Image (cartoon, rainbow, N blue to C red; front, top):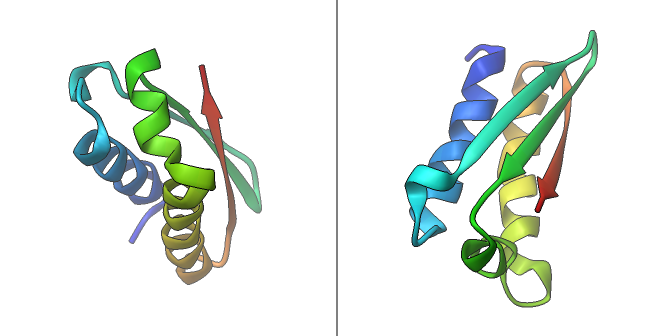
Length: 81
């Protein structure tokens, strides 16, 4: 597993949840120990991706952190409008 696979994983999950998957954009900003994953989606899809009380967002972060831990890195997910 390499660094870009975390980005690909987040993108895959977000596209599966989105009604307009072609508008899902994921960008990764790499640091030495920390990766920031920026997720952008259509306004209509933000509610689905975040989920009720943030449950989907929390689940995505949990999966992403498990993948990042395997790489001995930290990853932070930012969901942008």
